[in-house]
Amino acid sequence: VLAIWHQLTKAEIPELAKCSVLMRERGRVEETIHAMQRAGAGSLQVISDFDMTLTKFAHNGRRVPTTHNILDNRLLISEDCTKKMSELLNTYYPIEIDPSRTAEEKLPLMVEWWTKVHELLIQQRIRKDLLAQAVKESSAMLRDGYKGFFDHLSEQQVPLLIFSAGVGDVLEEVIRQNRVFHPNVRIISNYMDFDQAVHQLQSLHEVTVPLTEHCLVNKGVLRAFRGQLIHTFNKREGALSHAAGLRELQGRPNVLLLGDSLGDLTMADGVSEHENILTIGFLNDQVKERKESYVNSFDIVLVKDETMDVPNAILRFIT
Ligand code: C5P
Ligand code: MG
Image (cartoon, rainbow, N blue to C red; front, side):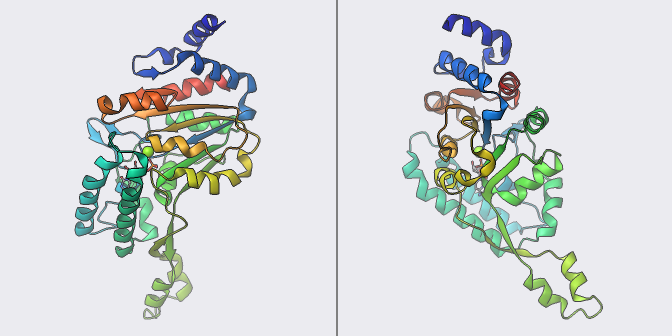
């Protein structure tokens, strides 16, 4: 029976035969895909990371910015802040992806990184009304085939949970500007909290502009981040406290999970009574050093693949 399944999948999902696709247990992957197909779209939910998973890692040899890095724009932050943020990136990103350290070892250092960056951003008093412009001016880019991915899930009414340790407000603007912020999309991320009062106070001195009108123009400045911090290695807690409570995800026991970090594997921990989980990991960086751990941890590993071809082919087969 297994041999027949092998052939079936090869004919029906030829994308899985590409040499950039690695699988620890091809047979089990094929069984899972078939079980998901039998259950259909009504049983499926998709849980995906954002930065470097739905967005590209690199394009034409240049790194694509993460949601945090999109904020690196003179409209929003000073040159000094840019410098400090990039020093922090140079210190902590190598730790984030270091294959020789455990997630437990990385955890406190990630909290340190995110906390320092968020403090810097708050000091900059970032203006909410300039975020959309900063996204427009950035080189943010979703993976090739993103439109098919988002549109298909929306048409099939399959919920898509985007679970990101990035900045939620920026993430939303990226998918809105790409016209894929469909009603089936739910987001768990770090959201900015904007203060309105400061502009109201300033406008008291501008007698020519009525207070209410002025407030409509100035939608506030960043004063904090809301809720509990989400970083790369605490997504499990977010899954248990937030995702588990999302009503539209109930009664969908099959999960397709997409990520680029080993920390992303815990994003489905809030799904109770799951039946089949298929995990796909994008291995973008430090390929040689991390290949073994990725193949041991994800069901399917996509090596330096900047497209959504494989997830799209699987989705088209399942639903
Ligand atoms: O959406 P996702 O969970 O992938 O977002 C987190 C990513 O953002 C991390 O992988 C990290 O490398 C990146 N990051 C960043 N700048 C920061 C903090 C995190 O680029 N200040
Ligand atoms: Mg990521």
